[in-house]
Amino acid sequence: MLRLCLRLGRLQDSNAVLSHYNEFAENCFSDVSLEFARSTRLLKSMKADLDYIFLKLRSIKSKILATYPDAFPDDSTSDAFDRRPDLELPQ
Image (cartoon, rainbow, N blue to C red):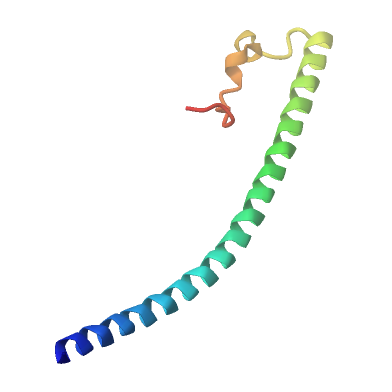
């Protein structure tokens, strides 16, 4: 009977420790998830800004090429010039 009481006491102690850890983990998760969501919004905004910038740059480059055909070397006008990976494609 004494052994059973010792085991019960250990299980109750373990349960209390796990309960405290769960509360701590829940608080940490809520803090991290807010920061993660904020960072995700920032990255999406930055990507949209960069996409707009590169679109404008391609437009300006095409206008320059239309006005001054010799402005850029021949190999710089190909699609291979933009070597940025498309992060939206699954890999």
